[in-house]
Image 1: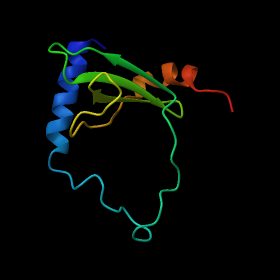
Image 2 (image 1 turned 60 degrees about the horizontal axis):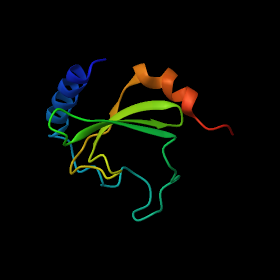
Image 3 (image 1 turned 135 degrees about the horizontal axis):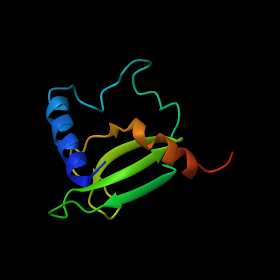
Image 4 (image 1 turned 135 degrees about the vertical axis):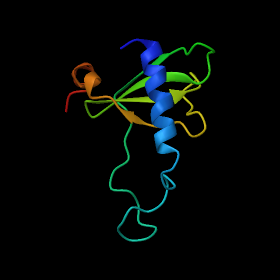
Length: 99
C-alpha cells in the first residue's frame, strides 16, 4: 500500500472515528480495576509523512498489524487513531519474538 493511500485511509478513518465515545472510558468490568494485560509492541516502523508530522507508524502487536500516527520520536501524536491493518499480519508475525 502506498504512503499516499495509507494517508488517505488514516484521514478517512479519523473522520469516521471522530464521533466515537471517549477512548479511555471503562468498557465493562469493575470501575477502576487494573487492565488485564500491559505489554510492549513487538515492532515499530515509522514512515515520514509528506509534511513530517504526524508521521505514520506500522506497529506490530502479538503478530497483528496496526497503523497509527507518531511524532517519529516514539511519542503518539494527539488523538492519533490506532487502525487495524490485516494486510500487515504476515509481516508482523515474522517480527513477533519467540515465546
